[in-house]
Image 1 (cartoon, rainbow, N blue to C red):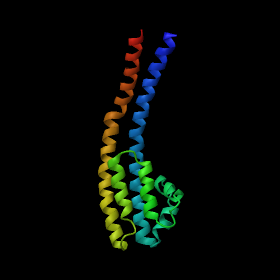
Image 2: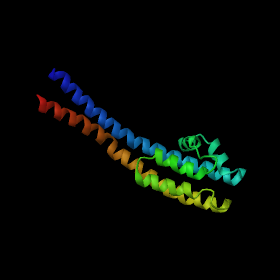
Image 3: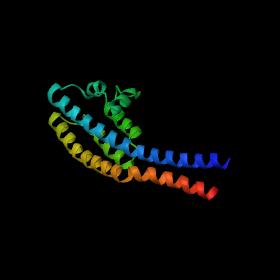
Image 4: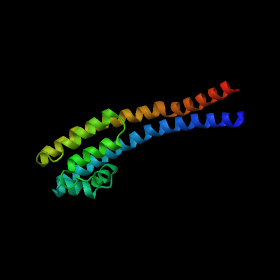
Length: 158
């Protein structure tokens, strides 16, 4: 019975570490997806002059897919996009940055929109760089901490 308990402790520690490492990877992927979305919006605003709701509906990013599901999407696409980012992004700083980006969409003419997107593209690039550094530094550390925490618990039981 002690052997089974020990194995479960080690496995749970390892799973905790893997989950924390996966959170870092998910943050990085979502920020990269946000950058791609901004580039898509920039192209759509520059060359097609379609309304924002249509640009959101046609994009396959997780932010846009989540926004289209929002009940008020047809009335207020920027609000739906902002709330989608609030649900997807885990960190408060990322959410605040994304929501201020989404709130400014559709608020001015095309050149103003492009400047707005350029500003937030630079800010998102910095956040993505930080996310990559954090994943590189802490990804394996979380896995090792979980494994060694499980091993320590196992040793305490024996």
